[in-house]
Image (tube, rainbow, N blue to C red; front, side):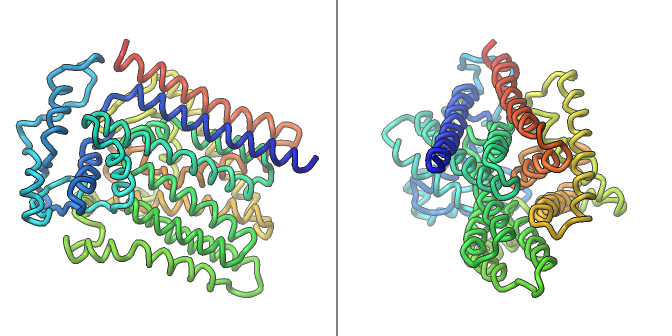
Length: 470
């Protein structure tokens, strides 16, 4: 009987993972090529790796934004730019080719050891691009559009381990398989996240690896042991190798280690230090390369961010903390997507207002749960909830300093918070566990998961469909 029950839950989890992947295929079909945030640039990066077997090096002055694309990629984007498309031409992202240049020939690129290739994504951590290059190579005989769709399918496959990690995180945090299934659905059907997994973009790899790190960090906090600590370090290192945003897991790990030490008679630092050592062994070589090559460990893109931070510094500690209390997870709920022209698909004002009030309720519930958890923090799951909340706060404080201007004055981008999305989602579900009477909890879990799925369906067919096809 017990084995039958376990197999039923495994079947339910497998069904959810498959449903999440099929949902991504729908998004792939709905979102025209090159319409994701910087999708041509991300595709061009992995195309270069696949074609030239080398990593592109950004050689222009950092303040000059010029991108070299392959001729076939340029032609594909030009066809869209000239309205040779079947969807609404007034809603597509324009590319302005006359201001850019064309990818040098493969022979020229090989001759100069790839250093003539200039790409706005060059300097980004290479993990996603190496992964995407494999799908590019598998579909090499097809057109550039067919190769791009193959890369998108490869990106969509990353949603499957994300679902599994979300379930594992929920199982540790909530202590219930049904609640963990609901949490995994809630996390995987977030509309912006669904969009990210349907395009060529390194955020997808970052989200999946961050979820893996979150799961094993939670498992280590709950049970201890070297194995979950090392696995947490492995995925944290991969997250940092996917995108520099993954570095937020470093202070988050330290917060988890401090939390565990609070409830044990001795400081437990050997395992987290071993984990952080593994994380450093995986990611540090890349950042040392960037420090030597670009003069900045985060690469050329983040030098520009530093310049922005210098131009728009927070005026006070209060203004620095403002995003902490007003931006997350509101940014994740109130806008389907907003990327300053790349794919702006705002939701109607009425729905935005409803989501605002939902956010307010979540905000109050989170901090009410935090007060209760602080009073009883010695209980393992209370401590895990507080650690998850702390991880989100750490990420938000990092953004408060580095993205202050865009977060406060341009609305920010929800995808920046996705490395902490599983922490956010778990905190919301744990608030239900603490604040809602037992006989109503399962209904609340189902309501949260079901409402997110409906919101995802709404976003696909009432936001994307009218934008491009109706």
